[in-house]
Image (tube, rainbow, N blue to C red; front, top):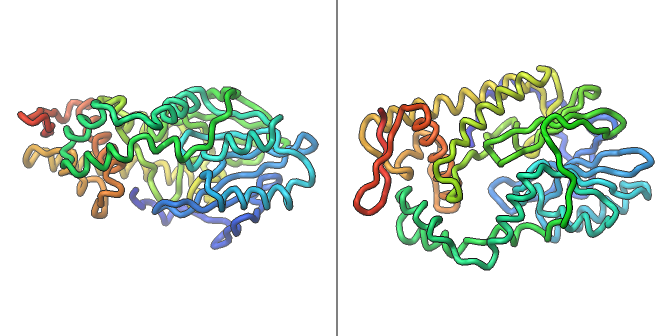
Length: 350
């Protein structure tokens, strides 16, 4: 992602972060938990929430790795005051968020699992790919984008890996919908859905505490990946993302405290949402200029969108995000694509 609009943001906790297996109370009843990740993104923020006599709510769960499970066990021994986890809420279905949900629900068999319907069903669908061979639609998708044989072979070898990063999901869930209200930490909360980064991403807003648990929908230092996938090659997730940013800005007060899934809690939601919108619009403008010079493939336009060199380890995310920008231009009537004799698509500005 890109770093934009840093100056306007305020980080009220400064450099303070919780150690693994420890918690920091950021607002009354809401405790910050930080777990390691095996990616270039090193950490995810999870939230442990005190619901009084009823027990505890966990928001997002981390990856099902041994060190994360050990850290959760330490928290259960030291931080729960003998009360159970009665509810697990997951903002969206990416493995760093949903990975331990099944494990937690088996540890606390009476707990409820709360997630939006599209995130639950999409996750079940992706997990079902484990053990399958890569579909023809997938290999064609990446060939059209301009990948070489070795890169396509690596995709085939990796295919179905999603399920290995997710502990077996709970078999039932309670659906979160946009506008739903519920009680947590002794206050009323409202669900605000976002789209573009994932199908139906739940942000949790508490007017009483003036807090937003934003998942990946609003991050202070990085921009969330917005990608087109082989399952829906003509999708326009960037429009969904830009619309979501505008909707969040309209729904939220400017001074609220944002509890993001990555980086540190911050204030300055409106400035950050404006910067995210601006960042993508600038990328679209640069992309259109590049497509005006000569026809290009998906793999040729990375410099318009990313401020760094794209290696093979992030090629699929970069290709998905580049195509999201291309599809957005196509939907706006500003670009078109044409396949060559090898099936590779070349895009040009209109």
